[in-house]
Length: 79
Image (cartoon, one colour):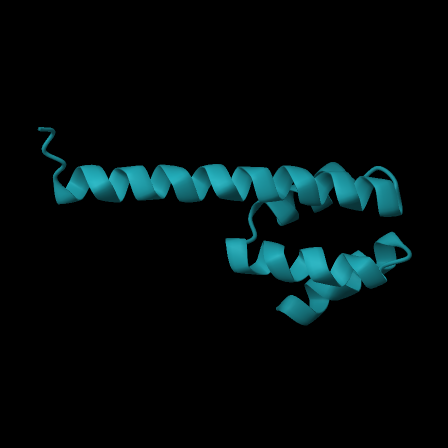
């Protein structure tokens, strides 16, 4: 029988959350690149710093984007 302590469980959960976020981020970047063209390194950095919740919101919002200006406006409304 394996004993899992609370800190081990918390570490596993954090690892899963980080893995999920990386997957969401990768998919979102592919979608943005396809919709808007190559995203600037500065914009990529801003996107990488979003929370999981914010990434999910951006994923929905990008369906209405037609230019990088729409993405920039989304960030302005985020603040």
